[in-house]
Image (cartoon, rainbow, N blue to C red; front, top):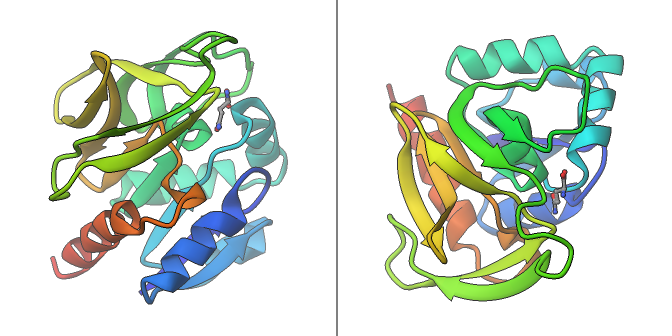
Length: 195
Ligand code: GLN
C-alpha cells in the first residue's frame, strides 16, 4: 500500500511515521509532479487550512487532487484536512475554493480560543476500545448530509465521519502512539482497492 501525504504545511511527518509503523509505504506531495506517482490513498494533515488552500491552488495541486478524490481515491483528512474536504464551512476565512468533496457542514475554530486545545478519550465506530483524541484549535462537524456516516461524537459534536472513501477526524491521532485510527484508514484503502 502506497499513501501520498500532502506535505505543504502542518503535521505531515507524523502521519507518514504512523502509516510506516503499520507497514504502509508513504511519499510526500510538495508539487504537482509528485502527484503523478502511483498511490492508493491520500492523507491531508492538520495545520492551517487557509495556508494549505492557498498553496494547493498556487502549486496547481488543487485540480488534480480534487478530481482524483471525486473519482474515488481514498482520502483521510485530519483537522485542517477535514476543513478542506467540507462542502460548507463557518468562519472559513479564505477566498480560495475548498476541495468540498464531502457532504458535511463544519465549524472552523469551533471551540473558541479558550477551549481550542484539549484531549479526551471517546468511542469510535469500527474501533473496539475508546480512542484517545487530541484536539488543537479544532473544527467540529455541525451537521452531516446524505451518504455520511457519523463515526464519533464528543460533547454532542461530530468529530469523525466517513462518506464512501472519504474519512475525516477533527482530532489528531498522528500525535500519539495509538495506530488504530490509521489502521482504520488503511482498511478503507484496502477494501476500496479490492473493488
Ligand atoms: N484551526 C486550523 C485551521 O483552521 C486547524 C487546526 C489544526 O489543523 N490543528 O485550519
